[in-house]
Image (cartoon, rainbow, N blue to C red; front, top):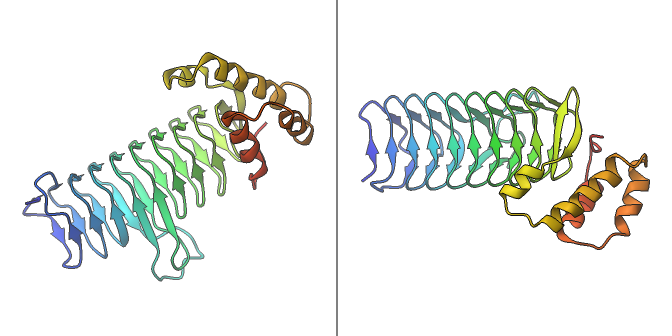
Length: 258
């Protein structure tokens, strides 16, 4: 059976997987239409609410508030959702809101590390294997792709997208989309090279890293504008990496940081 501390307060319509690996800590409050799958560890004073589903093997630390209504003036009530995948670590005092409009969701993927005091606002979509360091703040509708790393105290504007395998320096201000594979930093943040160490750690072969460097130089160091640089990229052999960057730029609603 799940191990539930005697001081925890759990509403009758909450579903908790009745598995011995599931643990609910002291003074936790779980209410609303919450679903918690097996192997989760919910720490002391955690408050989980709303239409929230938490996948197997997640750890949520002291004081986190999960599934609260959005801090958005457009919110008018109704069913909005938070969907959290498997194997996530959510540290102390993190806040994650549901979507804004009826039927909309905030979505967290699998195996992410969300450090203390992070805020993830309504309608955000976080991929897999993402790290968000302490105090990172994501406004509404932000998308963070797989394996991205967001430094401490970073602020990300609404509707921005952070590309996969990119890394954002601490205290940066993000106002435009950050293309995949780069290091970005500043106020506002702009790319300062590719994430070569990160790519090596993820076992990218040297020829792929070399091509990513060539793409970076074409986009950011050639003196070409975005349209001209894109025309040059279209001439290159269409590998997975170049397709990823071309598609990212074509789908960018805010424009890319340069």
